[in-house]
Structures are given as structure tokens and as C-alpha cells.
Image 1: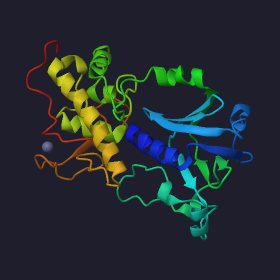
Image 2: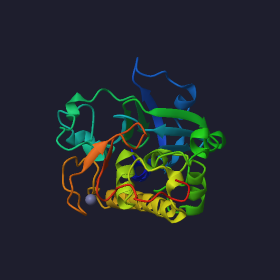
Image 3: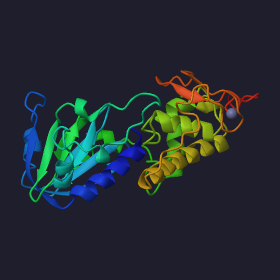
Length: 295
Ligand SMILES: [Zn+2]
């Protein structure tokens, strides 16, 4: 999940549940090693849901924080009495309206709601409604002071979806990885946080850089441009989500389609050496003729 989805989802969860007292937390039998700290959040007020990078952060009033990273098919679903009444034959209150947005290659059918397995856990609120967690997410329960010092959070680079973004810090971090490819650097959450594979492809296309371009061969101005485009891709994606618009990817998942800039066929390969496929335009994102300063 790209960071902007986490930020958007955190906003949705915060609006639905912040300030509400937890009545109980149900854990699916046989599917979850119930954590004592997690269960102790019953009776407490969920104060805030926010995001950093790809992490969702749930702060409870008694100083306990959950860190949750949605991986794979994991998702949070908001249940309310209204959703229950409208759910009909769907499994207990599953509401696709509030499901975590996912990036799905075109042509692949959405998994039907009826096929959803029971939730991993469900937070019931005192007045009404609940939040349900599905799938196999990463989930840590920690005292709030330790949560903010958790290595998963402290090591994160500047966040492309956050309101403020330290460009100099991102450049400082990128210069410490001269041997990385541009694609690998964008996915490295310690350099800039919040980019997944789709926004990585979007950023590389906007910066007109081939995925396999090594950072040491780029001029300072090109590095600045790369980071600025990463930031812009994150902000554009978050804005689209908040406006209910689809995120428009120029090349991601568009194998064989014409490049929006030059009309050449979009290619997909593993030239980014980042363990993922990269969609790119072989014309617009061609390697430069002359090597960079240290190339
Ligand atoms: Zn092109």
C-alpha cells in the first residue's frame, strides 16, 4: 500500500472513531495470538488515528499505541449500525464503501465480498459501530513513548504524503546510497517514505529517469528533481483520494499501451533491480548519452 492510501485511510478511521470509548475488542478464535496489551485497550478512548509512511497509528487515551501496516490483502473496515442494516446477505456488516483502497491491475476481478474471511479483530465502540481488521497486517501494541521510538518509524525518511516535507533531508539520505538504482531508492522507506511500486513508476516517469539509473551517475539537479517528483506524486495521489477521484498513473500497469508523452509502447521489466516490476517508457526514460560526473 502506498503511503497516501495510509494517510487517506487514517483520516477516514479518525473521523469514524476518534474520541469514542471502546466497549470490547473481539479477536477471531484460532486466528490471532491475543495480545494482553491489545485486549487492555477495551474501556479506553481511541484518541487519534494518524499515519506515517505506510503505517497507521492508533493512539489510545491510556498511553497505548497500535502500529499497523496493511500488507497484502489486509484492510480496515468501518462498521456502523447503518451499514449493518444495509449489508443484507453480506458477511457481518462488511462494507466495501469503507474498505482500504487497493491498487489492482486492470482486468483482474475484485474479490467478491462474500469470499472475505472473518475479521482478524474487531473494535466495538460503546455507543455503536465498530472497526474491523481483515487479513494479515503487521500490528504492534506499544506504550506511546516507545511507539514513537520504534525503529520502523524513526528510520523513515521524509514522508511524501505529509503536510511538510524536508527536501534537504531526503537529498542527504539519497546521497548516502550512491550505488542504489533510482527505482530502489524510491522504494527505500529510509530515503523517502510512502512510495509503493505504483508511485515509484509514476515518479520515475515524471522525472524522465530509467529505473536502473544508478544514483551516483546523476547530477545534483537531477537528484533534486527526482525527490521533488516523488513528493509531488505522493501529494497528487492523496489529493485524488480525498476528492474521490481515481489516481491517474501515466505508465504503471499499462504494458503495451502508448506512452502519454511520446506514444511509444510502455514496457515492464525488472531493470530497476529493486525486486519489483517497473513500468516505464523506453523513449522518454532513456539512459543519457553521456555519463554523469562520476559515471
Ligand atoms: Zn514516452
